[in-house]
Amino acid sequence: MRKQKRLAVINDFSGFGRCSLMVSVPIISAMKIQCCAVPTAILSNHTGYEDFFFDDYTDRMRPYYKKWEKLGLDFDGIYTGFLGSVHQVKIVEDFIERFRGENTAVIVDPVMGDNGKQYATIDDALCSELKKLLPLSTIITPNLTEACILSGIPYRSTGFSLNELLAVSERLREMGAENIVITGISDGNDICDFIRRKNGSYSLLRQPVSGSPHAGTGDVFASIIAADAVHGTDLEVSVKKAAGFVGKAITLSDELGIPAEDGVCFEEILGELI
Ligand code: PXL
Image 1 (cartoon, rainbow, N blue to C red):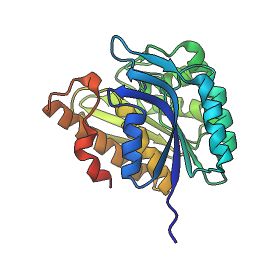
Image 2 (image 1 turned 135 degrees about the vertical axis):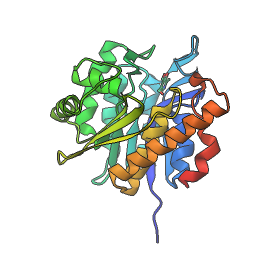
Image 3 (image 1 turned 45 degrees about the vertical axis):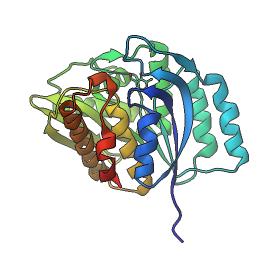
Image 4 (image 1 turned 180 degrees about the vertical axis):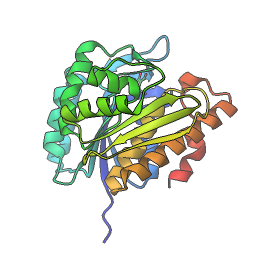
């Protein structure tokens, strides 16, 4: 009998703005995996808007997943994203320790910032603490800003050479990361994703820029990578799929006049992931 896979997603719930759990749950479900959410914070809308309601979930997370332990749950994958406070890093470490099995894929998306800037609720202490998750991961999916923050190598919006990407990824490997996907590397009219595998091999994948930068695209991307990792899909195949899907969603969002901060209208093409 076929056994359906199960993926735990530790991320915030932002009601409006198409990011974090609001994109992970539908995408992972469309990819035929049972998605189980652990909220890190509840927001009215993501922090890219001028104003937002923010309810930190730090104190509720342990009692929440202790009930999962009582139910005897285990997971084929654990995917962590936006954390609501510096203390949540220890909680995530504890969650991974308790729920990871021998073959559990652990996808760490070190959500900290974009375009060279940290998000509104992310401070230096949290950025520093997040480094502790790298040795627990099987795949990390930082964007270029986050890869630079983690590695300590200065960020530039354009002109990153292959040698510089190798240096950044080497530093991340020294810090404990196994498979590394650095997203959103801008190069002329192209946008590139860089893969550095556990065995040291690498690929630089490029596609033409498809439109304006929208919020939440990193979460759409990482959700596809996480679901594919649970299925055991080859990482390069998965990165191409995620990049193609995000590119198409951006083009469509621009066509429909969706403001960049409202995210991408992935709902329109969700069926393509099924
Ligand atoms: O998409 C990343 C993200 C996730 N969660 C929250 C955010 C952001 C980016 O702004 O604010 C709450």
